Image 1 (cartoon, rainbow, N blue to C red):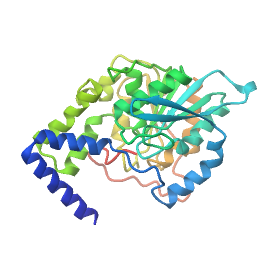
Image 2: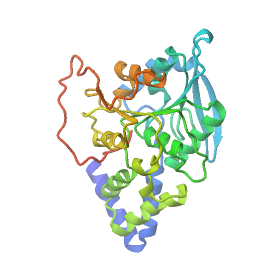
Image 3: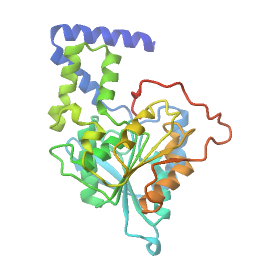
Image 4: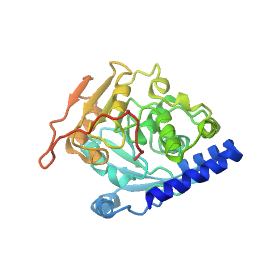
Length: 328
């Protein structure tokens, strides 16, 4: 069935592009930005949300208005006697939500940080059906104005380029929001790779692909080529911790290596065995994020977590072309 849907979708895009490549590109962008249902996508996710339910209920939920959406922020506070005064913003990935970031929030709270988890538009408790990098940065800006300033940005998967774009001021109509440090977890390094992946999936020809990519200039004020980590963060020298698993099947490890090449202010941590989604609740990862957010440990170029864990082989997949298969 999936193969049939793919063939029909490609045929439809070919027909539209034959009449108007511009219309095909606009439709591809609409499809790219359209968010899915917030209902659990399977039993595994349903159980994960159930486990997080009580802890999420203990947070303070504050809703913020951005164009086209009301976004929810969930605030986890330390006990007054342990409050360090530091604040951290946690941003999930595509088809995820704040509930999956609870372990990270708890690790930060244990260090005296106030942890603010942001539900991106169309995800979790936030309204809306449209999400792209510009909308994500608008949501981060709203969280900054309500809860900030933040000492640390933490972004998982799509949340990674989102927090980097916010820190770089990459979306022209949104003010730059610069934290003291950034953590990316399983994050893509070049949004063009994602556009190329979807273009191939939809069978877009060269003209329709160009029209698809031009939509970025319309919504962000910059061309797609600018949303590459070495261009977004050119000249930015704040400490960055990059965490990624070499067995990540959704966003290739080469993306972490690309971010690490920014310079000596970037530390790379390999969390092999943690995959793409489990990585945000891995005890070693959450401890490393909390330590980094507290300004401890210094800047070490490459660090390995003591993996694999019991029950896992530790085998790595065959090398791929370095492009993410999807965002999560």
